[in-house]
Length: 357
Image (tube, rainbow, N blue to C red; front, side, top):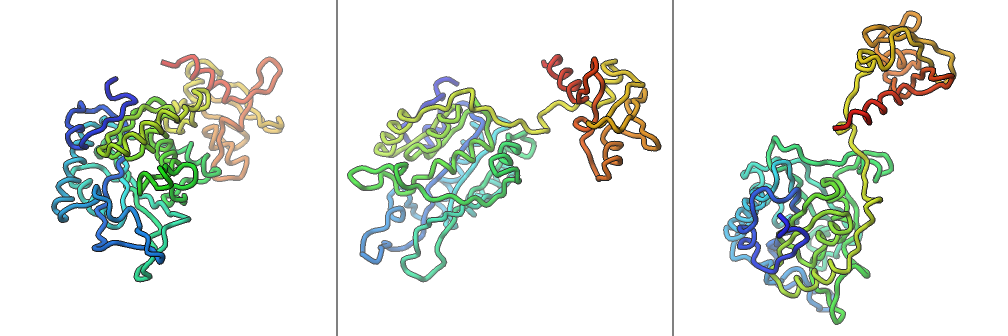
C-alpha cells in the first residue's frame, strides 16, 4: 500500500505493526533489542562508560518479558510478510537463540544462520571471556512452501565467482558513516551499510518492499533507497527517528540503469534442443560443428545428434568429444547460417525473445 511506501513511523513497534495490512512487504529486516545480560555497568580502562550495554530500550524485567515481546512482534511480522517473503533477524549470544526458538515455533522456515565476523570488534575490557567478535543473523522464509528470493548468481559475482559463504567479514560502523552529535554517537549499535547492502542485494529485487520494525538511525531504509527498493520502518525513540529521517533524505538512489542484477539460471526458461527441432527452427540432417570446424555431427529427428559412433544429446556428445564429464552443448556446437558459423545458442535466445509473455 502507498501509505507504507518509503515511509518511516515514529511510534511503538507493536502498536504500529497492528495497523499494517496483511501481506504488505517482501522482506523484513529486524534488529531488535538484544536484552544484554551484563548485570552491572561496563567501563573501559580509563573509567569511561561503554554504551550499548545500559540503554533503556534494551532493558527487560526478565526472560519471560523479553520472550513475550519477541513472540508478539514476530507474529505481526509474519502476518505482514507476503507469502513468498522472508525475514532477517540479527542478534548476539544474549538473544539470538531465543529468537530462533520463536521463529521455528511460529512456523517460519529457517534457511541459514549467517555469522557477521567483525574485523574491528570492541575489546573484552575485563579479560574474563573471549572477545565477542561476531553477531549472528537468522534468515527464514515465511513458511516452508514460500518461493523466497535468493540472488545466487549476483552473490557469486560479488564474491569473485565463488559461492557466497555464510560467514561475512565486515567492520563495525565507524568513520563518516557513524552518526554523531556533539562528538557522541547518536545510536550505540548503528549497523554498517555494507551489511544491509549484502542482505538486500541477496534476498530482494529492484522495486521490492522492505520493512524494519526497529529502524534505529535508518540503515535499512538508506540502503533500500540506494538500491531502488521501497522502504518502511518504525522507530520509537524521537532522537533516533529524526536522525534516520535526515539520513534517508540525504541518501541518493543509484541510477536505474545500474540496478540490474544477474538472473539465476533457475529463473531462465529451459528450452530443450529437441524443441527447436520439433518446431522446425533447425531441421534434422543439419550439420553441427565445433568452433574450428574439425567436428561434423548430424541432427537426428528426435533432437539427438550423431558423430561417428557417438550419439545422444548436444551436451552428451560434446562432452564425449572433449573427454570431460559434462559440456554445455549450446556453447560448443555451431551451425552454418548464410556462410557464417554461428552458435546454436543464438537460435535458443531468439526463440526466447520472440516468445516472452
